[in-house]
Amino acid sequence: MTTTSTVQNGILLIRLSGDLIGSPDTDQLLQTVNHHLGEDLSRCAVDLSEIRYINSTGIGVLVSLLTKFRSRGGELVLINPADHPKKMLAITKLNNIFTVAADEAAARQLLAPAAV
Image 1 (cartoon, helix red, strand yellow):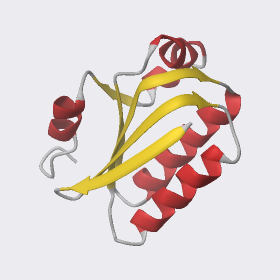
Image 2 (cartoon, rainbow, N blue to C red; image 1 turned 90 degrees about the horizontal axis):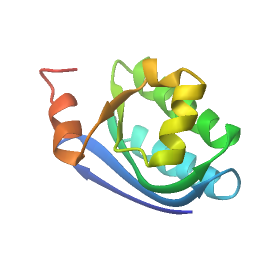
Image 3 (cartoon, helix red, strand yellow; image 1 turned 120 degrees about the vertical axis):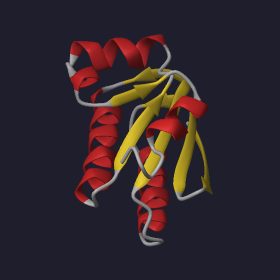
């Protein structure tokens, strides 16, 4: 899995590609997020459009990220989950917990300061 992250207008944008299945990739993702949380960010968008496969560990990481941001009074939005991640979110009923946006622009709108 590859991870890239940028911060724009107080929103951490994380783009993932490959398979979200566990260490060491998920460790790197969590370290990246923890680093940015130290910068006092509370809003995050995670682009899942390039994730081919996700397992229970990957789902657990997404839940962990959601918890980190919500505990800071912020929010996390998933962007355009590919087919397999979308199915896994539905099977686990986490599609009712996560906010999902169709694209990056929609995610930014959902995470705008007035919306949080």
